Image (cartoon, rainbow, N blue to C red):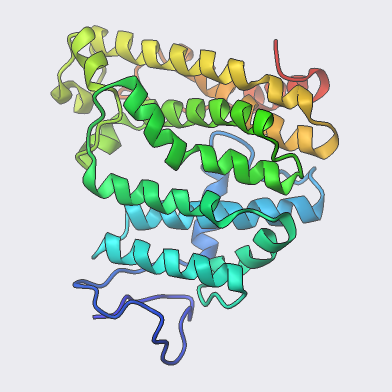
Length: 302
């Protein structure tokens, strides 16, 4: 049974597409994927950025979100859908992709010289999500973030023309921190998919059980654990924040938005008493743009 693609993504026969998937799966429409930018923790492609830069960031975001959808939300055979997206990614680098979001990615990878092995890591991370449901140590989680989050920042550095090893290392810290913050926001939703991204050793250290992750409100123990992870992510974020000061112009403005979103998210956790079960922890736009302005003007460190 072949995979079903909306958006008129595939027309006519194509022997290159997988044709032996055991179950069907659908991809969402491009507009639905891009609409989710408004709910992110950070400004993805603000209107103050130049048109060309915004176009590239939109293209990357569309790809990242489509891959996440395939690994997290798609019905049917997710492994087969991820195989299809890996094929389409290769085709995007050849200029012959058939899925609209991958077609939109083609000029970005060409003009910004983004290596294929950077973007394929996101697919590998989502394949890992199909097999690995728990992480024993924080180091194990960081290794996962090297696939699921860090390639995002590296791709952005390619877009702004500053994909240098030292800057990529700083970006990795920012992206890992943002991923950890997101995991802390989504502990109940992740558990509903039988995934726990809080390290098992930390759950034991704070005396928490997995059943506490889906309660109406967080226990005192769980709030302590969430604060521990948020503080850990905040320190990691700040250790990468000097990246902003290494950039200039619109590159600084663009990357500052990611750090600003992380700072605002950490502040939102504090305001919520580190209880993401009782309230939906989301950064305020006011705090995000305040932090963004300060970072753009002054560079990374506080």
